Length: 94
Image 1 (cartoon, rainbow, N blue to C red):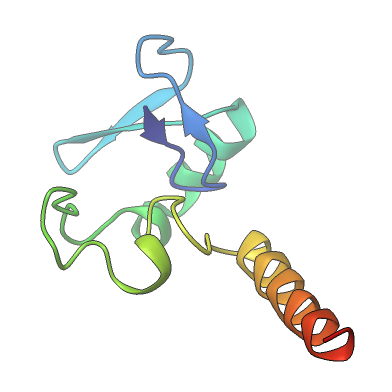
Image 2: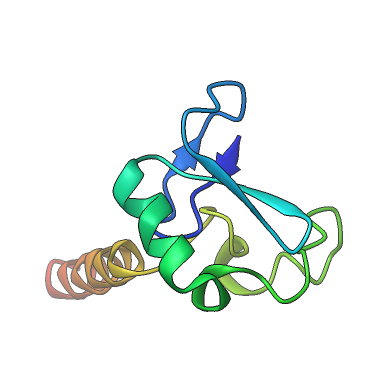
């Protein structure tokens, strides 16, 4: 699976409905609006260097950058808030 660089949604590369090439790399998108957003400002979304997903450095904190563990964006905050709530409840009802 590929990841839409604008919204982060997983995209099936076999269903190549929305894609564009930038600096020799093909980027795939979930919708026309994400594709147009990328094309307006590709430097904001394009990676300076491709991530080597097989390297240990890729893993980082909380499971890496590609949707594992805490996640990115607002989902990461929701996950963190749920963990804090769980710990508080655990302490209260101990």
